[in-house]
Length: 72
Image (cartoon, rainbow, N blue to C red; front, side):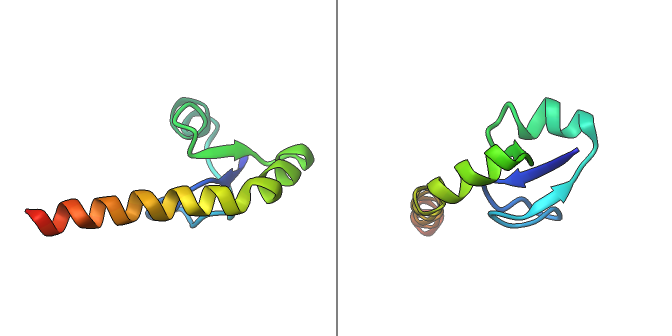
């Protein structure tokens, strides 16, 4: 199954990459966790419209994680 990644996933790709994964991995992990969308024409259009917002949310999470790591 081809999916569009909504965040960076180690050993798979970065935000916006279209990758082919096994159906079970997509259905049981990526899609329910909202880490990816099925790669359809509608999903591409939706992703491009929401890309800036998704990138900002990912940057915020990354900065929060860095702040917590520095406190440790």
